[in-house]
Image 1 (cartoon, rainbow, N blue to C red):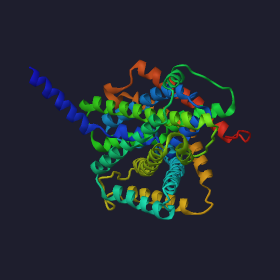
Image 2 (image 1 turned 90 degrees about the vertical axis):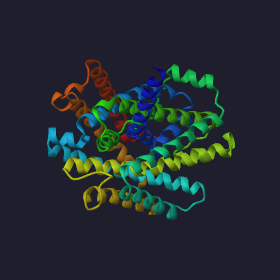
Image 3 (image 1 turned 90 degrees about the horizontal axis):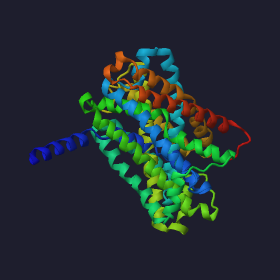
Image 4 (image 1 turned 180 degrees about the vertical axis):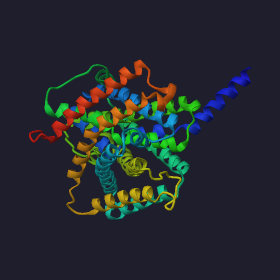
Length: 418
């Protein structure tokens, strides 16, 4: 009896290890260069005061990502596919164009983060940016889905560098936990802006498309969905645990000394006098890792949903001849973004702001489509949302719409200086 039980446990563990990947990768890589910058600025400017926002953000992220995963498993199709089939080509086409522009700006931000982190180690961006772009292009266009997934999962382990930096900063854990449990609010524009930015940088449109497409390509079966759900849940917790330690690191070292930063690499440089050289190095290496992973996934997500929307072949397992549009979209995004970062005085900040604005505008539409689709019994069968899940889902969407609208207004308002 005991042997049988051990065999069942071992079998389930192996099955989970075979299925794990899309959820952890998607959520973890959401902590990209722009996300790390947001958390670093939050910790440096307001200390631990905004840590409590990570709790509702984690709940919202799990709710949204679980729906995307469930649709991928049950339908075997990406989100773009389902939107096109159920709401027409026109609506899908215009959504894809806006997402393409938004994700182009995000990809530029990833390469800018990679360039900045390389220069911290005295490595020229004119060498490292082209090299990084070439290596990730080779990985995706010449590798299989299994190889790419294993590389990404392995690279996700480097995010623990932020946890190490946080511990080495020696925070006062009692005060940290107090800030997590007891919400504190300052009624000033900068505080409100950064509060909303934490949510805005955690839940983005590309995540829903990439997660569902990668699950569909992996071919996870209905009976194994519980393992995919666990994969998503673990990923969501990991991404916000990393965010927690980034905030804590900067809150412990930079905030008490009044050091204001605007970029994540500035945080890594400023850490050394207060937390030591190794904490600074861990922070910088993790930033480089996050940037290059974002430069892989965001263009990949873009290629997935554009090809699905247009009915073209898509997938990492495909070759250039089998999926030319998929491969060329990915190649073009990587190449143009990398080249733009190398141009002196290129309008990178404008592109990043435009990217945030467009993502903010599209996020509510993407989430509404997702909820309508997941409640369509013809598509999902018995796997539609329960009433309780719908209440949570719609409440999450309404909250995100209000917060996103506020963030967009504050981003575009001329009198708010961050």
